[in-house]
Amino acid sequence: KQEVTQIPAALSVPEGENLVLNCSFTDSAIYNLQWFRQDPGKGLTSLLLIQSSQREQTSGRLNASLDKSSGRSTLYIAASQPGDSATYLCAVRETSGSRLTFGEGTQLTVNP
Amino acid sequence: ETGVTQTPRHLVMGMTNKKSLKCEQHLGHNAMYWYKQSAKKPLELMFVYSLEERVENNSVPSRFSPECPNSSHLFLHLHTLQPEDSALYLCASSQGYEGYEQYFGPGTRLTVT
Figure 1 (cartoon, rainbow over the protein chains, first blue to last red):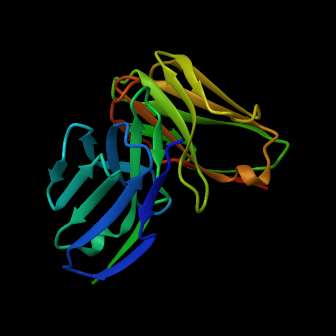
Figure 2: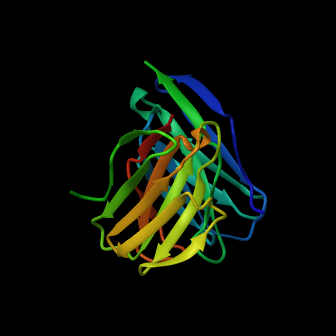
């Protein structure tokens, strides 16, 4: 059974700092991996989707990498801003079907 | 309206009530999903519909009953719920069933008293 772990569970940084969020998964036979952002009490916003054949994806100040063989992904946020404060969720999609297995998330606080 | 919408946004119900959650997607997608998000737990997939047919049902108690009348609408009918069913219920949609990116609605915060 696929399990997804996100470390750290919570992170607090000063504005302007570069930071890395980690995601690990137990079964490397994944189809793709998706990073989401969730604001308090709100739904999920998709940030980046990495296919299993890709090594990284970039969108603005965000860069996500994937190392399928080691079961790891990282989300790099450059020059963090208070508006980046949210919970960041990692989810992997298994090879068949559409099932997404989520981690518990990393709660990020960027202090002005 | 754009994207995925959910109503109501907040719902408080007693254990003997019957209520329904509604989800509508305006993206032209063919697959829709219900997820449950409880405090301190990862999101749990509850149901998946593809082309209006249920393709996944993940051991969800029968007090939750989904309905997908067409590819744009998804309902979750609730009856005789328990306090532990209090959670954020999220709807999502995707272009197809296998491997496509999922787009989420804002969720319905359900409290069972």
